[in-house]
Length: 131
Image 1 (cartoon, rainbow, N blue to C red):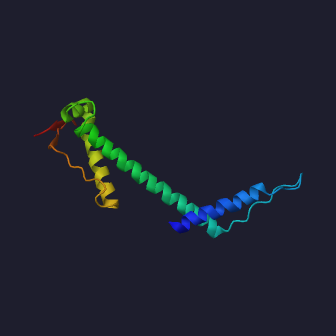
Image 2: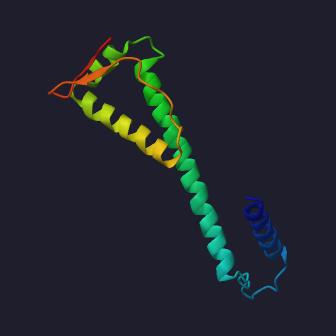
Image 3: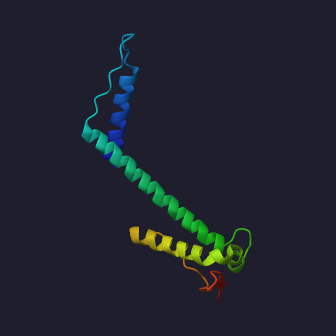
C-alpha cells in the first residue's frame, strides 16, 4: 500500500510540475511522458480501490437491510416489515441471504448477523415469522 501511495504522490507531483511549467505562447503543451507500466499501476490501483469501496458499501447495505427487518428503527415488528413487502418478501429475503453468503465467501466473518426468529417463505412469496 505504501508503494501505491508513493506512486500517486510521484504522479501527482510530476503532473503538477508539468502543469505549472510556462510554455511559449502559441505552441502546444507537450504531453507528459508516462510509461505503460506506470499507467498499468495506476489502473490497477483504481480498480482495487473501486472493488474495496463496493465491498464495503455492499456490507453496509446488507447490515442495514438486516436491521430494517429485525431491529426496525420505526418500531415495526419483523412480521410487519415482511407483510409490507407482500409477495416480494420471499425473493427479497433470498436475495439478502445470498448477499450474506457472497460477502462471507469473499472475506469470512464479514456478516455475522443471525436472524433471531425462523422464517417461512409461503407459496405465494409472503413470509411468516416464527418464534
